Length: 390
Image (cartoon, rainbow, N blue to C red; front, side):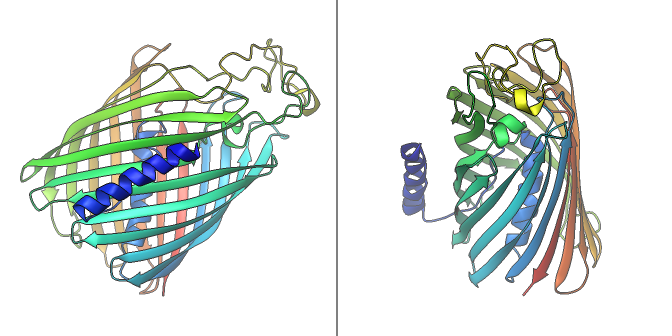
């Protein structure tokens, strides 16, 4: 694993040396509800792009549908310090505690994460970002997270990015914190706690003043305790048209319509819970003292969505503007179709809404709501950030 991460970082650093430029996205391009995660990262990026150092409070609530094994709700709270050491250089430190809750009283775990990072503008059109951290879980285990990214934009309308990352897979309690069954084949052992290791490259090209095309591709591997490693591939592309494109201080600064085609595929279907299931083969809920006695096959154990083939075709509309000096907004909606192994073609929809309340010259409160039905379940999140500029 360490060798995998080292290759990612060496690749990114070599590109930076040759091209002398940089900037980033987040863990969720492709397989982790790819559309909505970009909205969350954009919100964080807006904070880092401010011209002043800042501290921020972080609050997030996430909930989703699903059965006893699949449903995962969580609360996340913490804070961050973003220190602008000099123009174009931001150092940041982020600490959070996440309380994970399954759909039963005894399904409760938590994790405490500390992450440090640096974001540096190498030139007017290029940025690099590096971060590393660790999460200590209540299941007496620890995972490491990391990210390295490079982005370059040219005056001709071309942008290029490459990102390598390692992150926790927050889809179920099994994949997020891991479970220690009390009986059965894994009695006393940690099962699950999946981490995602990936490298993704993307390019965007403006072909007309208001029209651009874009694409990305990458690969990765997911690993965990007492589960098989699972490699995957992802790719996507599309085109976007800026119907309205005005300065950021206008009531309507952007109206954009786009189409995207996204694909990802895993080598193995590890959506199973055998040996660590909260229900037995008859669907009866197991008490905490009998977790591991489900009698289900341990083949395919992993607890995360991993079809051999997933394809979505989505139309997307984004609206952005500044209502007045104290309020700006960003609204995004998408609709289309999705299909994946074991499922027929069905609708895929989602929305994202961010309101940025500027309370005064120092304090602001960005609030984001996310909802989508990408994959087998519905999920939604509410994110608050209280930002104080120094």
